[in-house]
Image (tube, rainbow, N blue to C red):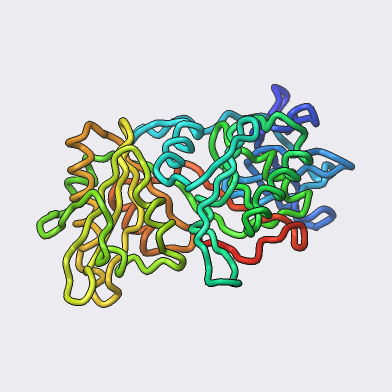
Length: 350
């Protein structure tokens, strides 16, 4: 909140501050006998017809009538974490994109349209391998008005028999709260939210004993048997094998590996993905061993920082990564085109 020199609460936010991060306090129960206040921090995405829309870090939008405001001010984004690596959203978005490359892509200004489509049976539907490889990554200006850009996006994905998705982020300096609000205003539906976490690489390498973990440059049939991701065929292998320096980890098992993982080394960054453990063998430290083995290899290649992506409802994974020193950097969301706007029949997994 903002307190003036006279000790009064003041609203120092105006419609001119749309696009900036703000902190506001509002009266949550106007007319109540006992006043109750609610504080909201996020990016002001619009101020129209007497209503403010503020997008919080997790991507949720809060509607606030301007008549309920009692205090407010523009605030900077939180400073970089004191422990662990500091990085901008754009740097991490580009690193993550290089670690999970589509089979084909096309530029629309500073937007990248990405597709990795598995062919279905004759006459059957086609599916995209993960939303990350089948969505637009908007890192700047598309070069045309937004409505025109979205029309081009729907057409491009429709030609490939896929629904159109836009991947956009919230919660850090340089993220895309305004774009998210514009998509929602046009009827695009947020289907999935995940977070990108960062941490120090050395702490991961020292967390567990990597003995028994086998590293390889390729994903063999056994690794894929444990991965068990829907739509994992020839196109999936191309996506999984993409990236500057890719490593696959396997803990051998009886019929299938006991645990697997993947790491992409890219300069100072090591990105972890596809960490899977046999359900019957969980809580035995296998995931930690896989991550430690991959982290040690990444350290040998000169990396010092780590990142990974985790869905917001995966409590077990979040607890594991938090214990290794990871923390959320930003949230990202996949927005799907409005129902009936395109021709794509199937939704890829995250």
